[in-house]
Image 1 (cartoon, rainbow, N blue to C red):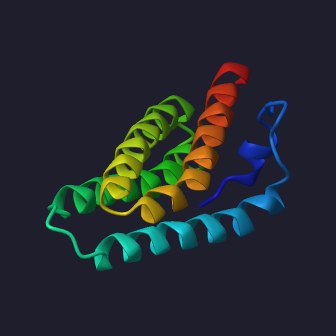
Image 2 (image 1 turned 90 degrees about the vertical axis):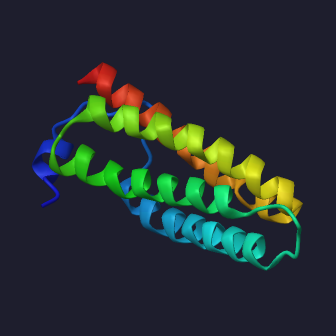
Length: 129
């Protein structure tokens, strides 16, 4: 499904990392997401956690959509919209998790920074190609 010929022929952004870096980074970042959700879930609070779960679900759906839109459908412009929506939902997620547990919110900061980097890459791919 992944069209490596298409990707290999794209003009790459200046800060495009080598391909091998993505798997270990995503494994670590998904671990931080899981840790944040677990902490958010077990913290005893009178605040409703429902909205946090909704934001997390929407964010993860967007996260799952991005790769096939970019790598399979080759829709760099639509992928950019998706990653910008991921940025917005990540900010909302950090704020909501932080309001319940400072640790849960802070754990998401590296993930957010990586998503912002992904936004930069996606925008550069669009402008260069």
